Amino acid sequence: MKIIIDDKKQLDLLAAKMIINLVKEKPSAVLGLATGSSPIGVYQNLIVDHQNNKTDYKNVSTFNLDEYFDLPIDHEQSYHTFMNNILFKHLNISLENTFFPEQDNPQNYSLLLEKHPIDLQILGVGSNGHIAFNEPGTPFYSTTQYVDLAESTRKDNARFFASLEEVPKRAVTMGLKDIMQAKKIILLAFGLNKAEAIKMLIDGNKTSDWPVTILKEHPDVTVFLDYEAASLLK
Image (cartoon, rainbow, N blue to C red):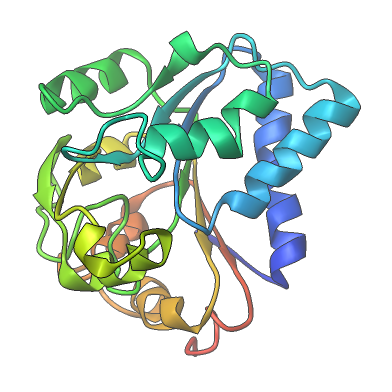
């Protein structure tokens, strides 16, 4: 596990460069993408690079980690809408090559991932240590599935909705087993509210109480931390 501690602006640039270099080396790269606030700066750097350097995404495929359950895909807070607005519409990527977990048959997504292994997976981490929507207690062997969202996760995401009551209570998420099959993983963690989860990942033991700790066993993880997220490390 490689750990990089710096200010967020520099980390966003470094993470974006890893993705850009991969796409240039492998034009048909398969990217695993995350939503939420953590990857936005990285995506903004990808857009700037595409505009300035014409990095080509026409043969790139993407797989998103998760999607809310029973939220229309055209809802303003769906992850389909988020990804289209924040990234996809600014790149020359084919929407036919962008994939999200299927609400009607989650296991199909795991089968699709087996056929199209992810070259580089971007992850954030929740304050309770969840990755994707794999909440504490999720078995490490989990594949794509329906999940109930923890109250802490719904509160974390309430800032994107008009009220906590509007935050969906269920989601469809890529499982921990699916995530671990990625060839390379980037974990982004910014802010004090991520510090405890990062301490468990770096200094603690692997435990399903903190799903992020499964990354200890992955052979190629780079962890990008700002100073606040790294503040509890030894």
